[in-house]
Image (tube, rainbow over all chains, first blue to last red):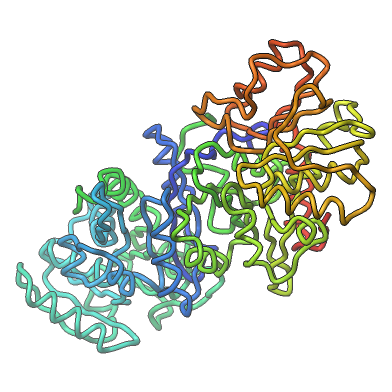
Length: 276
Length: 276
């Protein structure tokens, strides 16, 4: 809390609006992180939570995009794939993944979509000095964010990837995309095997908010395993707690977000010109 | 500016949204004033500017009202009359005036509309110790806000009211409403006459932002005249500057707003139960 007065200094009639669209919305960290990044860059802008119910998405989003002072939207679960249809133009990553998490209004009024999840995850590993080259990857969750993470990790040259999703067709689709793009990676669709993996990534919503479940049925994890969880709230999910207890190195969703936020604000402020 | 850090403390995933809808939007003061009032009451809520173009209003507003974390809207020029159609229920003032400036989502999901402009204006005079009883009133502008101010002032028991609007039909309609409601007031529709007035009120947009015009064609004002201008940006309009130069007592739009904000936040937080 800052001072209590007749007015506040962080919102006004000229403030440019950005929003994060999701369902549920309470768990998102984008409002505080993007707004801080806009502030760091001395922009009069704010990112607010926009709780859109699935049945309202098709009518509400075009209406939001007509708000004259709204310049960009972030998409989270369950809208990353569905939001593609809103973009007049898709960036390279978004075309590969078939999902977006950012939509920017261009100076020409055209909306450009791109996905930064995968780049953010790879960046988080890089910042921790953990190479993905030659590693055996187990990826759980191949929806919008999971597919983005999968494509970006595949681009780093791992030895193999094992993909799992409750919707098997979605995992197969990602496997096909990974096979189609260089470099060559050995990909299978199968439940995660802790014994045969070097890096375990959860990009499913399991463990979010009060969810006490693990995304994989195990009692312990081998200490050599690197464990990543994309869930940002709570910062320490049941999976991350178990991994830490077992002596594994862990990378959390918040680390992925930090790298993303800066790249996404570049994207927004350039009207979608600085796509990944 | 507070500290610059990784996050800010005034917006998050749980923040409840309110918006002010207008065209133009840059001049509005509601975002900083309402947000400060929410903060004073320790509510995690923010009011943001929503710039809706006239052609988009009918499609955009119902969509905004479906946002699951949006609890209320404020309406400003040119939407106070048009917004009535959005309310499932109208408060007493709104029914009299035929306009709303607040729309609150009730706990039952029903939207309730009310107008607080008039009450805010009367409250501003009261706080300054200026009685309207027995006064000769000249009112310029009888749109949504002007009608609300006219009805509320009529309720204070002035001696006479002279109403003026570029749209004469609008002024006639307000005159009819004033005549129909107690107490009895002598009302005419005519251009303002400085000589025959004790209180001059501008509730038209003349003088807003860079507009250098006066709402009345005069070179000077009698010092005994009390001059009110509902325009909030700039705080000192050409009319207020002239009045001050001529020795008139002045009441500005910001004073009207202060009283309103508190009443409107009561209205929002009660889901429209605390109508005027």
